[in-house]
Image 1: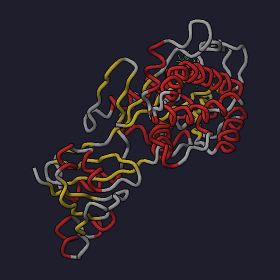
Image 2: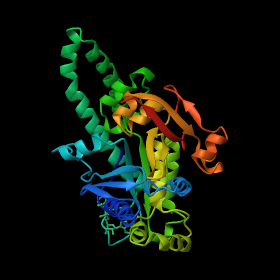
Image 3: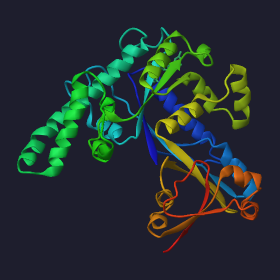
Image 4: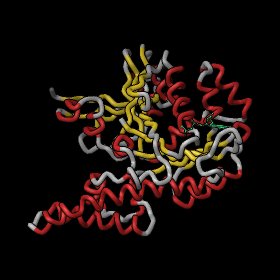
Amino acid sequence: GFKCGIVGLPNVGKSTLFNALTQTAAAQAANYPFCTIEPNVGDVAMPEPRLDVLAKIAGSKEIIPTRMNFVDIAGLVRGASKGEGLGNQFLANIREVDAVAYVLRCFEDGDVTHVEGRVDPIADLETVETELMLADMESLEKRTPNLEKKARTGDKDAKEAIILIELALAELREGRPARRADVPADKRREWRMLQLLTAKPVLYIANVDEESAATGNAHSARVEEYAKGEGAPCVVISAKIESEIAVLAPEERKDYLDALGLEETGLTRMIHAGYTLLDLITYFTVGPKEARAWTIRKGWTAPRAAGVIHGDFEKGFIRAETIAYDDFVAANGEAGAREAGKLRQEGKEYVVQDGDVMHFRFNV
Ligand code: GDP
């Protein structure tokens, strides 16, 4: 599955948000079984109304949503990368995520100490980013001597790695995150293998006070402006409100949201932003036993998409019977879609589309 790390300075609302995320998931337990892998890892079901529609048409007994992993990565403070360095656990946790959500404090509250003594989300953002950039520089500089030794003996991989490291260091030394580097399209894989913290796509979460949940405030407006300049998504959320919504029964939730002037929970918006950021799409498998959603990256071919279900599906792939979501609904199910000529036989080269209802044929 895909993983999103939650980072930020202390006392900005990370735990509040993380707990709301996992509690919402727990509250949905009837339909959406939830599990906590570790205290700081939450496996959150993706809200997906289309899945309910499909399950109803097909009379599926069970609904199984797709999930996104959220990891609460605590331990980042100013100077963390110096001195003792960022803790090993911190680095291990953040290296393995696909995207990073920066939680930024946009609420004033005299009772909640700010580590820097003032509320300034952009300064906080820069503090967090600086620590991550310093950690990246240190790890790259540590790796260089060994690679240079190898390169001198003619090791081609080492030479290529050095070129990419130089590319990253050029950005970092200018005070820019590694994700700004212009990486050649055919070197993306090797680039990802460098596992740079600041090369990961970023999402900004502006945590506002309860009164500003629907409208945002002056602090969150600055964050939105900044995010726009970066081309990064920004979600305005009130972690406090989210934690109140999280404990409500699903049927009470809508009234509460209406009263606040909100259309969706911040958590839903956050998950959707993560989806967009990572270029993810959903396809479905639907039958009388279960209706299930699967997450893949945009651009994946049918065999690769099948591999998410089981490795054998990918290896033994023969073809995929495919119905677009709208066609499935319009024809009231698979039989109708087949009759209407909307069930397509697709081969190995087919690029799976968002909302496709798939049935894979494979050799064992
Ligand atoms: P973390 O250190 O980043 O994990 O921050 P916490 O989630 O532990 O929050 C620190 C404190 O700020 C707690 O007392 C929270 O109740 C409070 N807090 C978090 N979000 C909000 C908010 O939106 N409004 C207000 N007033 N307080 C908040």
